[in-house]
Length: 118
Length: 114
Image 1 (cartoon, rainbow over the protein chains, first blue to last red):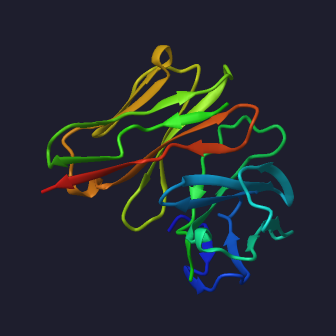
Image 2 (image 1 turned 90 degrees about the horizontal axis):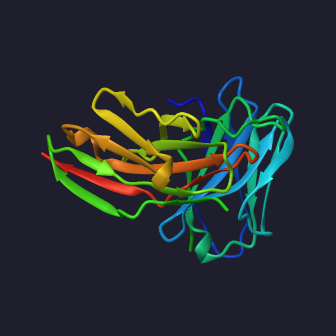
């Protein structure tokens, strides 16, 4: 058990729907990262939060949004779902990742949330 | 721009064989970090190693060893005397000092047959 908790583990929904994926970081970690893993795109960085603030953004679609709450858990909201959004969504956490971060952050990953859009 | 290339999509070996997983990276930064992560069939990515750009010393940890060569922008991973439990997808990753995001290569799927 890595200490990073993701729910739900599996989710099946229909096109056009909206879902929320939840992540609790490892105790003491202030940064949360979201990654999307699909067969054709590999592991893609979506977004990172540090202590409640957005810190870095990757290839995140406008239909997707995220936030990190005061208790440091994070949620990734996916709306107007399309078939191509079917993927494994990983959350990772690290102790650092703020403005003075050096980029040396070791990521601790959760088990992922598998989203299937039908 | 950051880029990580793992040209080997799949590798299949027989138990006890040595196997090397290749990783080539691109970055304009002089300070950066390289990582290897393992994704076993269970799905959760597990951290294996981190090297910074100023430390080109090779590292050995049990049956695992890593060869970092700045001259060829490579950070290769060798498993000696492979075991069935080594079967997994292995990802090489890169993070630049001024950016917090870590980008991953496409991964290499390793099959170790008994």
